[in-house]
Amino acid sequence: MNAPMKPPEIITFGCRLNSYESEIMREHTSSADLDNTIIFNTCAVTAESERQARQAIRKARRKNPDARIIVTGCAAQINPQGFADMPEVDVVLGNEEKLDAKTWQAPDFGISGSEKIKVNDIMSVRETAGHLINSFAGRARAFVQIQNGCDHRCTFCIIPFGRGNSRSVPAGEIIKQIKRLVDNGHKEVVLTGVDITSFGADLPGTPSLGKLIQTILSEVPDLPRLRLSSIDSVEVDQALLDALADTRMMPHLHLSLQSGDNMILKRMKRRHLRDNSIQFCEDVKKLRPDMVFGADLIAGFPTETEEMFENTLNLVDECHLTFLHVFPFSPRPGTPAARMPQVQGNIIKERAKRLRDKGETMLTQHARSLDGSKADVLVETEFNGRTQHFFPVKLDTQATPGELKSVLLRCNDSHQLEGRLAE
Image (tube, rainbow, N blue to C red):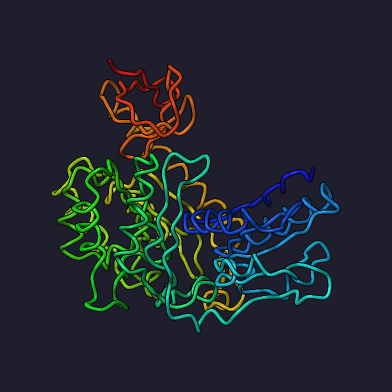
């Protein structure tokens, strides 16, 4: 009797959208003949992320000399030949190909002599299909793709060339996916994409992200928690602001701010200015006083002076930012920012540290403010979970991952939150 086929190992780098797409691949490959296969779903947001993927591929080959190694994701889409030239790699797939079930069912897939690079021109892709996923293995929260690609061309960003132009998933398919996930036990869903606030611009009637959220909350009443991935605040409309007032919308927004200096924002080719960010946070706080904000911030963008950096540092206080994702600037070949006058590496490193230290201070303040309060915590592992505000909590009692638990919070001496299950 033949042993059952072992599913391929999928190693995911980067964003929530990549995590979602890895689950699609997991379902597509569940019945494929991909025994002893490792799939790397790569990220290209920085040069460092691509370097880490290459390092992981080489390590995997050393540990598994007979394994078939497949590389896909944004880094593979942008630089397919570079990965194909690696002796450790057997097949390179594009971002469109990895989501096509037929790719994984091809009888000659990955066999010696077949085409090693299978990467389409991503700019030719005009639609994004909905994919029905039953659940997310090992994850308490589920991700649902509502959009892919980006129509903007920020000077530091290579991602549009890995994802293509913006295209939206029809609302009906999104609703169907969320209902399936809720029916299978998920209590929190995260809407994800590359530029989710551009949702609907390419669909009939041009529905907005705000209208989509209102529809989800109306048509999926059994969904306890809905969360957004990173948003571009300049694209937020009144419908989205209205939707944020619903208590099933989690009071945590992660903003794509990048800088707090107007000149740097212009050189980044962003579509907002410093005052826009501050005004947005003030407006949202009026609607939801308990709202907390996270943000992506780049330290050491080309031409950034100390005064310009101080504007970004001060923005953390002015926008009441709690969760910072700090990126030391890393030039990506092929982007306009890579050709601009660069800031010295030691200065970039020092500014990134100052931003991260500021972020730690803001986190500490937030943790102290929650001491003694009660929160609904989504259990992620047996002794860990996250509050509505996405703050991590260590539980004092074992709980079942995926459950929502009412918890009494305590801020310990290390400024971390501990939780005691409430009666």
